[in-house]
Length: 429
Image (cartoon, helix red, strand yellow):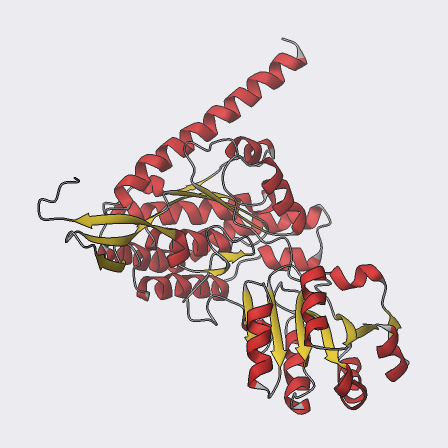
């Protein structure tokens, strides 16, 4: 057999595997969508218990992934992200319990109104159906994402990175067993069992079986998914988040917020990447704030006006303004006005999270109304742009696309609404 025929046969087998997985998920989603909240919660609690009870099995499989990763010279940071411990599994289990404790959105009637002919019209929350999640490195995502999908009545197909295949399969096995134990379809949680990257491409073709794709990972992965998917994709490419220090800001508050937004955890998408400072406060605010940043190991890259005030900063280049550093690096720009700050955010931002520090109520409202990002804050660190911190209980990701979710995505964002109409024999004339 020629190499071409062998390759075609392999592709056909892979395609059929993905069709089989997605078809089973489609069938499971119909059953799960009708399951009671109590039954779903019991399954989630059993998942949590069994992850802890079978920690030795999971960690044993995880260690095989870790050893492979180390043999391939994967970075220590990446190895740490994929490593599971008893303590980390306890946290994953606690996360499942927290999801179980959340209010089930399925079946909620979010609005009801009466028409002149007496018809009552409403909108009821229903699951999306089958959700495909493509992610990297962290095996905890397998349980976190599955828990949110199960609670919201959705089947889920999980495709983790090749570096965590054994860990993901072990966790997936335990989650499926818990579903079956409570009479729910185990195929509502499925792990793609192959590491071939073409599996992702085959998955992205199945628009008749999968309702939504959520990629979680670096910008390269997300762009690859968005460019190749026939299925709607909820995504954010990067988090270029800004804090604008208004001329009326309490300077101590502004410094505290900005330090937290940059330093508390610089390698995440809701950390501040650019600080904008009103020209009327720049000379009094920047020297002290810059010293605090530098003392904490932050490299500052400033505009020419910033450099005039703080000569030791590195002069910023044009591409700095659109950079997601994910590191202890901060761009700083002095702006002439609120309008200039908003224009800068519109040009260079990623529609993720922006914050203003101000004592002027009118300015806070102008900023809220003028900034077109998924989360806009007043006098708060951008680090609060997180589903848990915003009271969603948990999140499955952050969307900077406006259909159908915008911002951190919790349980409600994993549902849509259908119209329900209640009549008393009305007919249309």
